[in-house]
Image (cartoon, rainbow over all chains, first blue to last red):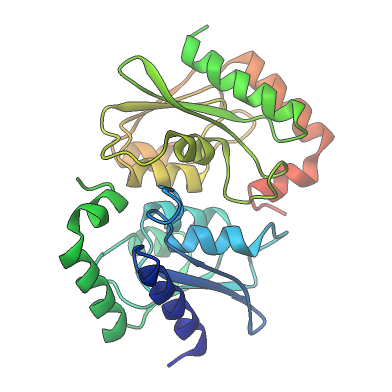
Length: 144
Length: 144
């Protein structure tokens, strides 16, 4: 397993153990993780802290993101994809997009390289959560 | 002046008095403000708290945004526009788009109604800030 994707999965597992939605993310520059985050809708009652958003918050203010890669266990939604486009993050590596199709086309149309690893571990984690807590999941993607 | 836009401007003025970037936002349901926010990059060293994002954070978790309107003193960037699209907020009213063109086309392509009031008070506020602190502004829109 790619160690950066493993770090994102570790964040998702930690989120799940806190009672949250199991989506994790890390951002990497020069082979080093500069931010780690996880979806905190439940933990902090926060509707904007998806995994990628928390990851960018934890990384803190950066002069530029042009030399970074962001990892997420799940394909980014329009909020997170819009942030990736606005912040000019050139590359996104995701664990899967079966549980949620997300905004891949939008990112690619803006020149972002998107790699989908289609990992069973990520799909299983999300599917178990969605099956157990559909209301929380559909609230998270504003699809109630 | 529209009282909701005035409330967004008040948030921007408050942000500026705190040393921050003067962009404010409110979200309205049934004629009532349910969240108020302002850009807090400087105040909280937070790269994701644009005015609209803070406004949605302050509004807290909602089951649906389909009956809301969001106001912002400035045209939303791709982060905030992506959030508006993902959250299915149907209407955006902005103070101006001269200082920053933002992601109007993207929102409209996703069925969001966008109204630009082109207000001198908003343009003046942003122009003074950008002239005084160009580095902070271009960091905020990731254009350094």
